Amino acid sequence: MLLSLFFALIAGFTHAFEADHLLAVSSIVTRRNTLLMAVKDGIAWGLGHTSTIFGIGLLIIVGKVAMSESTFHYFEAGVGLMLIVLGTFRLIRVLLNRDAEEIIHHEGHSHGHRLAYGVGLIHGLAGSGSLVLLVMSQIPGRLAAVAYLLVFGLGSVAGMLLASGVFSLPFSKNMAPRYSFRLLLTLLSSLLCVGFGGRVMYENLFS
Image 1 (cartoon, rainbow, N blue to C red):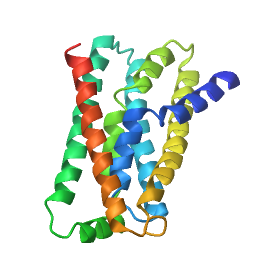
Image 2: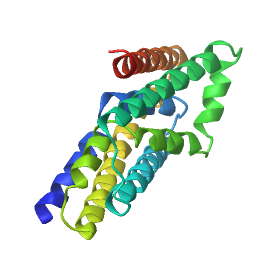
Image 3: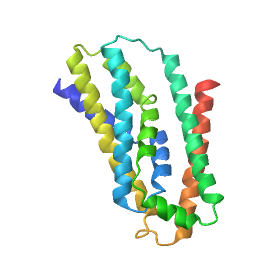
């Protein structure tokens, strides 16, 4: 039992570092210019991710709801669409506004973390988290399965907390005082987000 929970913790932690998660959180933390706000975004993402996995997990454990592999392909495509929207909106927000520096500064001090939580909610539907749910449904005993689910979620919160903190450093005014450099990183992050999202959609809908 303890070994299974340890595996769940490690699996949740490493799950946070998958490419789609890192691209999404990098796009989110470009709005921040303080480490604390970025870390809070990471926590919000992890909580949203855990909320969805826990909800679906209860359906599998308690409701004995079966989900086919094809269902998760549509979930994955939804994540791809979310990445495209997230990156595109960020590009438009920065490129079409006359005072992009003011926008980034203002957003960097915003205390709302709803975006990060919502992105985490959508991410909870797809990826290896979905595969973990399928494996978890085979764990004997409902209590053990729920414990596995919660520990996996705790690991993902810890992983994304670390990832968001690290990714926010290049966008901090203390680390990168030149606005042009921070703008370049923001544009690159947004373009990668759009490109990877398109790839995810294509692979899950057309290949």
